[in-house]
Amino acid sequence: FRQVHEQAPRRVSVSSPGLPSASHEPIVAEVGAAQDVLVIGRDLTDNLPQATQVAADGVMSQEFAADSFDAIVCCDALEQVREPRRLLERIRGWLRPDGRLVAQVPNVRHHRHVGALLHGSWREHFAAEAEPLRLFTRRELEKLLFRSGFDAEHCRCLPGDGYEQWEAAGRPGSVQTGALGVAGLDRSEAEEFYAESLLATARPIQRRDYGLTSIVILTHNQLSYTRLCLE
Image (tube, rainbow, N blue to C red; front, side):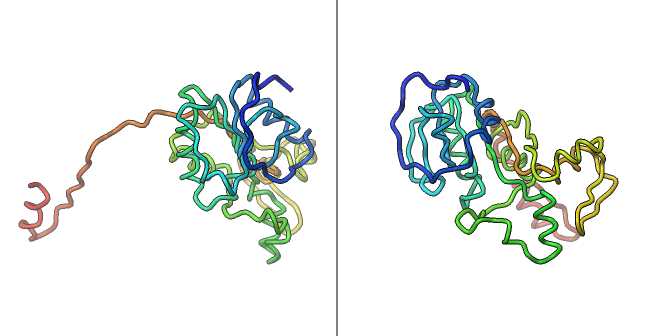
């Protein structure tokens, strides 16, 4: 793994132990050579030992100065807060203008979850202590980032159950597993059904202030109301 920090920042409430460190290699690669790193959610101490670590359930009470970090990692965090957009808007203020957000979330479109819905057994695929409050597909994650003031550089699928077999079959535009069968898909859409999680990288953007916008709807025989709108 690359060096991501030269001096250890202060450490705050740490989340519970996470997955094996090897599964976080894509996150570490996205962080790259960032010097000041904040990790929200899953404990990545083994991978980013000198990053500031904050538990997802305590991040909304944290206060950091503006432009404090080169990179902020949300690992299994956005789905664990009630208002992920509000969290991202706070994160945007903590990031430096050229900083980077790295977000990993479980992919609710994985065929295991869709198949469970068909059988009426949705909850069995989530651990009781990690059951998400929010659910994301790739499209929903991209929309959330945009609405929160981020430009998504990419949002890629991390392989899950069935991904290797799908690749070995030539990456077809179809899904067939158990009771679930879907055909006529774009390859990128089919890939999402075999992705365990989604990994997005985004940069903060400056929002343009368009000022006040008025919409005037003309109505039949309601001239007085139309005048009020124009005045």
